[in-house]
Length: 246
Image 1 (cartoon, helix red, strand yellow):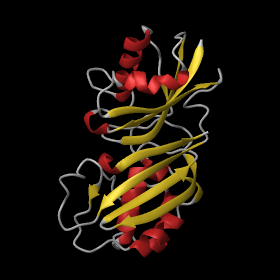
Image 2 (tube, rainbow, N blue to C red; image 1 turned 30 degrees about the horizontal axis):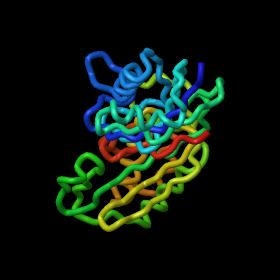
Image 3 (tube, helix red, strand yellow; image 1 turned 90 degrees about the vertical axis):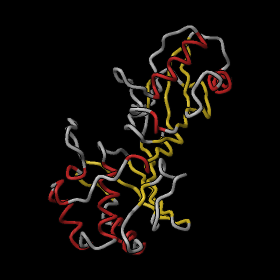
Image 4 (cartoon, rainbow, N blue to C red; image 1 turned 180 degrees about the vertical axis):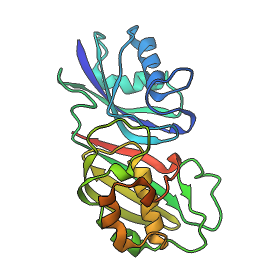
């Protein structure tokens, strides 16, 4: 048995997320179907983590075990011909037997893209959240507000209801704010993120940048662990898994 590590890019618009779901399309299912056609094996594909419906990935990682003799580096070319056009295998390699895409990961990098313009974009509608506020977002305030979240905190107040995780302490190593015309990208690097955590963090930073949440109150909001005091949960369309760290 060989352990094959895949690096995957996908447009999550047409899927109910990464993980296989009953009666709903998923990225994991499509790739497993492709591997079955290619090798004749019904493998279990281990992803680095779930992405929700509508969330994209440029650097999702997964692994599976196979007895196939196909060279590890040939899987992208072979699989891409069997996959939908919105899923692409960007790379593959043979990994150690004990490598697991999820449990071997030490951190992740996500990005969230905002479109701060008067009108929405027909082309970017599935890849950026159109901020409909009249005023321009204050980049200086975004940078200042984001600095309060860097470090190790209990992010219980920035987690969506329905999550059953027991440990809500996470470490954010960096939050970078960059601009390209009317596009604003927030890039988060951390050792892990809770359910909807980045979407809630982004909504909170958004509110801080327009004055709906006073920046000086952010440390207390974090300590309060109260979801009601944080900002909105921004839509999934602007979120992308950029890279998994090992």
